[in-house]
Image (cartoon, rainbow, N blue to C red; front, side, top):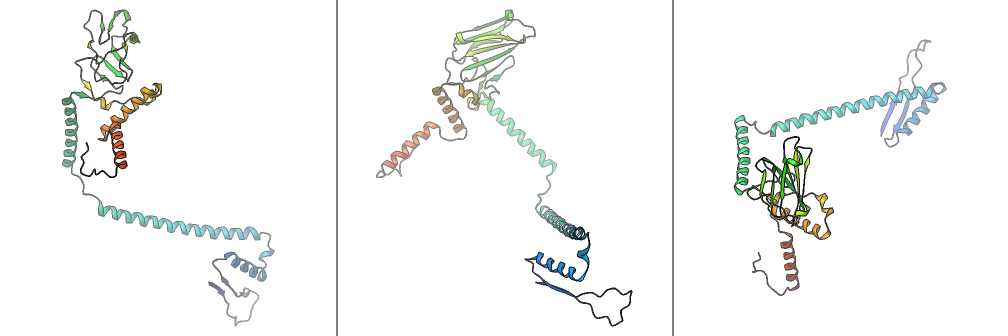
Length: 303
């Protein structure tokens, strides 16, 4: 509890007409839990001893005093907060300076870059050595004179030709297991055996904007990814094929189930995890072991 007291010693001198009025003693206890009660006592004392409450501008004057005190308190709080923030930043700088790693020399940076380049070139050499390439965005391959893409149902081939080429200048022969494409009077751009057979009656070709030949091949086996278009060209890594999820909705339930299973097994294989068939076998084995607790499997080896 805080005690606010103010006393004025008795004036030993005789009062004069110009002397200020005598100060009135005021004593009241401040309860921190009831600050408004303290203010009420203060106002009662002021009303009793002065003419302040007779003023027409009383409320305005009191509000001005309250606002002034409030602004002062907020400014002091803000100043203390700013000092605290600056102290924290200074402490953080000291900590960072103490634990900062030593500067890396330019020679070390060059060595790291060289190592990364060696890794990249090594992975590329390994890929070429295996004879397989990463597929393009269409799950096919971009060759020098043509490109191809695929879904599980179809293969799309694009052959660039001189601008202004008309269909009568094109030769395109599509057979069950072979394709030949080119311009009349010139060596064929494509001429070879297909990876798998196609449905000839469902295969088409057309000229796109008089600058490319577009060919659509419908696969006979619509449950397999082609590793190459024609025999002799580089193979793609079918483990890196990324089918469009939006096309799954177009498949019949049986085909969709098979495709989803293939996609799941492909992801599992990339992560070194068991396939769906292997997981099913493991579940059957666990169920069998649970149903036959009398059997000892501790020394049994499972593949």
